[in-house]
Length: 529
Image 1 (cartoon, helix red, strand yellow):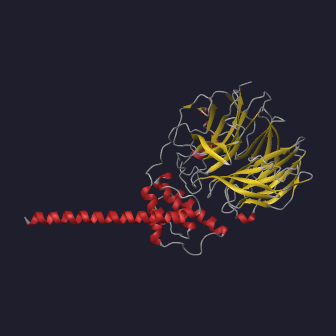
Image 2 (spheres, helix red, strand yellow):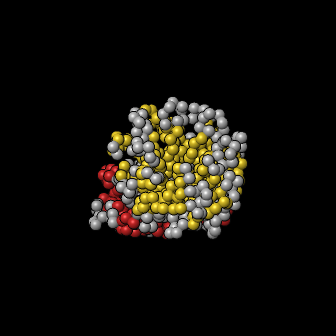
Image 3 (tube, one colour):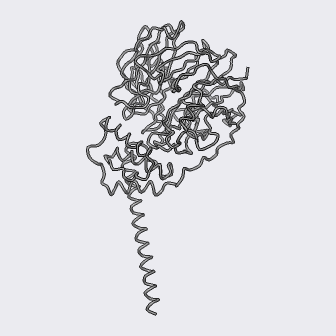
């Protein structure tokens, strides 16, 4: 009898102990959630635990801990070496930028609670894509052509631009420190080497003058204070790019992702808008145009935040003044309209904010529903920053936000695409609606056929059929442009390959394989005409 009573008591005590442990665990997780709201949401939109799997959260939190002044990353001891190295390198970047706190902002116990909240509530593996349409692996509309442009030892193509008025294709390569020109058949016409070296990322033409934007530091290895990015002005480019007179139009810029030309001041001259992505620091700024196609050197800051990737100028409120829509990545992910008030003054109108995992990369303005209002084509899929695993994210892809008027935009279309990087819209099939060409720089490399390019053909009412070609999977496309390269009045596509190790650490040997198989440039010629 006593034996059974003691056994019963042990069961009750055991159950009570389990109950206490569960309550304690719940309280710790509750505390972690509160700490996440307090600390994580102070820098960016508070992320939900299910946005990353457990192992990715461990690495990400290692990096985020540095922002809180916590240097101990011993919880990553079981992580792969490349993951620990990635986190440590980011520590060095924060120290270099002088933003590492002098003392921890929270104690070890609270830090463990915050980490525990995310890791405990995260899925074991990344959540799958939902609503993904069937991808047709027979690519209609385009014939694929290789070019004579073959830089050695490998291409890191950071710029592709189709200059339709001449039928030329401009190619920028950071490894070659060059700007090359191809004709519509893909034959190399001329090349210009730059000394000191630059990394061309954007180019705009006004007559025979070219404005060339250099990121300055592609891999973000220099302190932001160095501000090595700049805009060059190339004169008489119609004669020869190699012999064109060159001058620095605007020096000492933050690590830029994009430049735009638009008349913001209303004086009839083109002003310069710079998206200074930066690293830890950056901004969106503009420089007033002066006679002779040059710019005033006074930097007028529109938005003092790092992470700007693309700006588009448009008069959204029909007041005769050009406004600026800006897409932000990095910490404060989101879309903003900077409303021109005149006299050089702008007010900020947020459109949406997203959490830091979205990795926004590209923006274009188009009227998709033919209502006279400019809609936003937005791409998100940058997939390296603090997550070294190239984790597949079901929220990466291509989106269309329809303009409702009054600076209100509503998401009307989403195409899931792992690691999506750039998307451009045009009427490729000649049926009077807008189709989309999209590339991915961080696709699903666990697949035998990673989706690195997608042609989204509009069937009407934003219903898109998706297709691609297996012939394109041997490349890693970092940049793209569309336009008429062969003079037959339809839209062609030019892809630029960027063969970097970044984003490939989790796939041993893949970088070398892509180096061997990947084309620096491919032309997809439209067969419509």
